[in-house]
Amino acid sequence: MKTILITGAGSGIGAAAAHSLAEEGNNRLILVGRNEEKLNEVLAKLPHSENHCVLAADVRNASAFREGLRNILGDGSLECVFANAGVGGENAYGVDDRWDEIVSINLTGTYTTVMECLPYLRKSTATYKHVLLTSSILARFGVPNHSAYIASKTAVLGLTRAWAVEWAREQILVNAITPGWVETQMSKDSIQRHADRNASTYDSAYQEQMNYVPTGRMAQPEEVGNFVAFLFSGKQNSITGQALDINNGAYMQ
Image 1 (tube, rainbow, N blue to C red):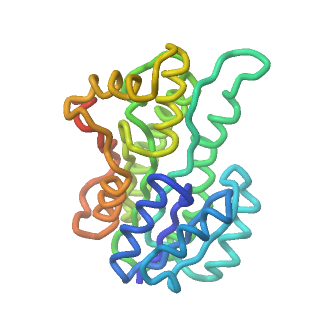
Image 2 (image 1 turned 45 degrees about the vertical axis):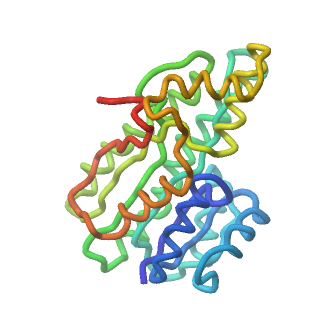
């Protein structure tokens, strides 16, 4: 049985990935997030829920996260880590600048998660281990008022490349996903802010954004979750150091 840790598991892509991975029946999941109530709600809906557990922790707090891992895993190991926790939204320089908040969660939190999990990955006897980071389509291009978010998600791609090279001979494969619009609460909040700024409705703001997407739609969280499950499935062991785009054609290399 694979043991898989997912951060940001209480909602959105993290919760969807947990469901996809739980459906396989041979995975043990550790669901990590700051809101224990939400984590337990996700856990209760998972197939084989008795195999899984929750860890209420802030990924920015390395010592608390380390202690939580020790309590759950003991001398055990991890086969896969999905470092998915993150926040979105705008920032502006000044007294209320959210720079520190956004960068500390999206970048430092990702770094802390993986580095604290690394000893458990190294203990695993699996031929290949997997680390997956959540970046964003906004690591590919810029939009106004999101400097902290874009900087943090671009830096996540740097972590991906650095770790992929560093750990390749240990058979630890490191990749990132760069989702575009996915129908999560974070995306809905972003659309609403755009609508409010332009004194328009949510529906008109949504359609305006979808006009930039070739397929004209947002991805569903389940689509991303299924892709995560594939990457962790062992059906491929040659993809590493890559930023993998899931964006309905909104960005094409």
